[in-house]
Length: 320
Image (cartoon, rainbow, N blue to C red; front, side):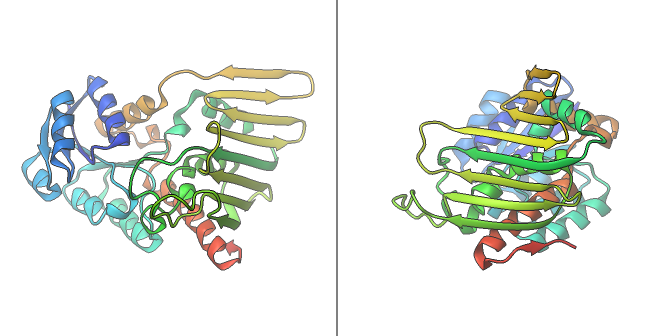
């Protein structure tokens, strides 16, 4: 039985706790949150012991794995302390807001020998895996994506210094899929603005962003993202090459070719797939089960933070 702790008891943590509870190979041993009521409510529903102090949890519990589900500004040295005890980690996205700090953590985690996972759950969708197989060996010309949705309820989210903005904190999933399916990028340039949400109390983060990328392959990419008032939320990813267009919307995949159109209606809980894969990897030591480890999540973070920097300076960011 894999004994698991969870740090943070908010929306995404609740999703993970539900999946841990469903996994017959795992046990939720502890939940830590600075809000005592949140941790206590979680263990009342799923079991384990409630903590408000992270160090106390690590000292008192014998954990095999830990899910870190805290805001990007609140990580501190949680990863390093867990790694020092040999505790395997699944760290929710984004990993942080400082590339220097995240790279330092990555070195610590690598040298510790622990297994790491990250929160890029969309990679586990059946449709994304089918798309990845289809694209093998194909030359890509253009990659286009967008995501528009509402303002999250977290009070810290509108503070750009604490969240990094929508591209870093939310639409990082969409950009991660672009990298996962089309390969790495060598140049990023972006424009961002706060336009229609200026009446939100305390807001300092842009509500509209437009990002251009040049991939290592030479393909051109673009993603638009925003949380300004809209009738609905929507997201899409489109990849185009010679005689094909591949589109992902929700869990559905459409591949358009000259002589046929293939449609896959995706199904299954990809959050559960992600957590089950991580738990199985911890149990067996098989790292190949994890589709987005800490190092891969670091690269996605680097591209989103580079877009923020480009929007701030008005200059493109080049990667070596």
